[in-house]
Image 1 (cartoon, rainbow, N blue to C red):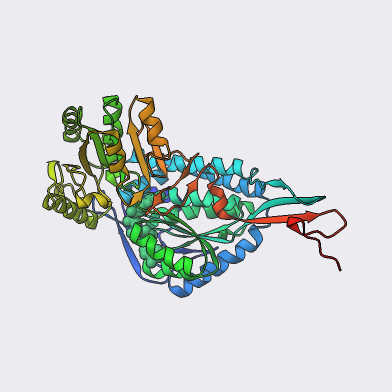
Image 2 (image 1 turned 45 degrees about the vertical axis):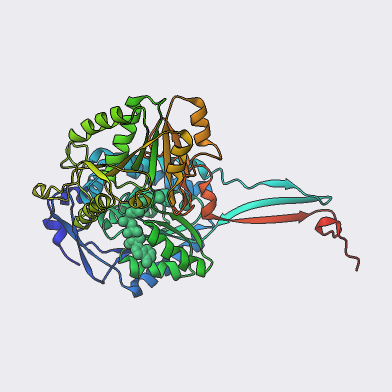
Length: 513
Ligand code: NAD
């Protein structure tokens, strides 16, 4: 353990969240970590934020063992009581909203405005889960047998292994945790190695609440370490009943194989390649706002970021001219400053990936209209957002580049626009900007968008917690957050109850003995 965090200019933010100078990366009722030390560098200005000690495989075993043991007790606590704990967690997040948001900004670089939104989303899902704790309904069905009853109940599942991406370093944990807790599960979180401090801060808040209620704090455990080490331990251990994985498509393919191999349950929330169709019946102001924020928000590092815009040829020139004007005026800079619209990318490797992707696009025949430079003098990982004009057969269009790189292309017929929108392997988010009712309905119909999210007159990003969140095809098919996504965190039990006083099988079969 080190004291480096104490020297950091950001210690005040961490102080507000109850940090000690020693930052161990593991928690299961007590803090532990004696593996490799990891320096955490801010993409905002290249400053060292602190040092986190990763856990060892032996410590992982201890943590998972305690988290599983905690589940044996937690599953028996009445769901509305579990809801009270989640309510208190939401209150803690309200109290610490500003400090936690600042930490998110310092650690991963999104603007403070967006980080505050991320923490608000955490509070919202806690509120949602509190209500849910009294609504974990099962069904009763009419039995085909006389004086029988058929029913379903939902029971807690076990330990939920939450593996999260860097770009929503706090919210993804809360979407999973708030639901898992009311469902009677415990949580073992492996965050991205790029954002360990945010994970420690969230776990501290959960620890405080669980202790206040007298519950085992290992109910919300933490395991920080390399994905390939700790991640694989989660993927392969049968004590983890459900793995909820948020990350890239290749990562999800690996996790999916391992978890499926042992018949574990899975939620996969993988990459997107999201498009907006701008119809000739669009309100241009709405279209510009949706596209611009969708593409540059979080510096293009949202799974729902807008990556492709498919514009009707009749308004293409006007649309592109106005979008270019917005791009030229983009205020890039410290994400802590109010006026900033676009902060840095998460790290230097992300800047390299961005620039390599732009080179590829140009090699494949795409035309660069704006941006793509890195801004090394700013001290952090800053770039200018990129606009590229392409045709719909460009091979790079099939890939998610996790950066502010937006492709512009024309369409002539509506059928062609839908075909382009659906013509990628990913299926997370999509949108159409139109005032034509028929176009909007077709877009939302079985013959329309093939994505998990399909919006009309609003962009691809900024999902509300009330709906189920997730995508189709290579996005993995998982659903989190609102609606009935909670069912993935429980096991369903179907029961037939016989009060007839005789024995009868279904399908009218009687056995005489
Ligand atoms: P990533 O795939 O690099 O990492 C995701 C997580 O997987 C990290 O915690 C990492 O440590 C872990 N990991 C690495 N190897 C592992 C292994 N062998 N077993 C288990 N876990 C392992 O993704 P990233 O760069 O952090 O995030 C960006 C990606 O995540 C993008 O593709 C983005 O679209 C996607 N994403 C999707 C959603 C969604 O809800 N669909 C949300 C956020 C991000």
